[in-house]
Length: 212
Image (spheres, rainbow, N blue to C red):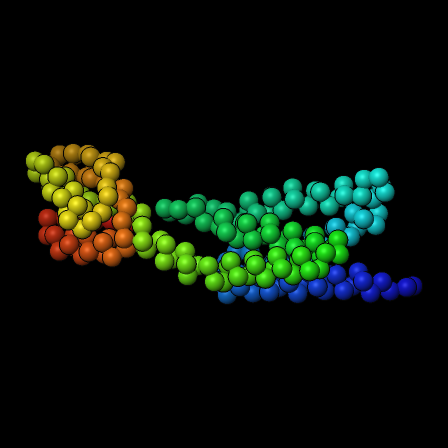
């Protein structure tokens, strides 16, 4: 039996670059981590090679073209809705990108695949710092307040938003017996939110104060 070292090299190469990206995901405790990314990259690489080796010469991309569909189902499995936001979208996109790297290696496009892997790793490892900075500049939060009913009390709390430099929109205003329940969607710098929260925590009239 003749050993095809090119096939072995491609599989190991795909496993290595998938592992590099997977190590970053594992470090951040994501659902698709080290082993998962290796399997995705290596599997996409192997399917791509098999597509070229065993498929009809006229239609050699038939097997490889279905990788995208399969990866779509796998990516959908890591997306879930949390209490107040959707989680897993970045990991799902990473799965999609790592599969593309595996396909590139399986097709023999090593330089392009290495460049893509380095860029994926850079985006995951470095850009979160920039993302956090941008988010602090204009952070969206929803505030919930429950307090004893008083006439025009909502105007008082909206004045607090303005004094703290926050944009706001009233989304809920409910009076139940002697209790008033209010909620606002707001936007502003993170430090302005912190100032507003500090003020609200000192308000003894509040029965309940929540935000996310």
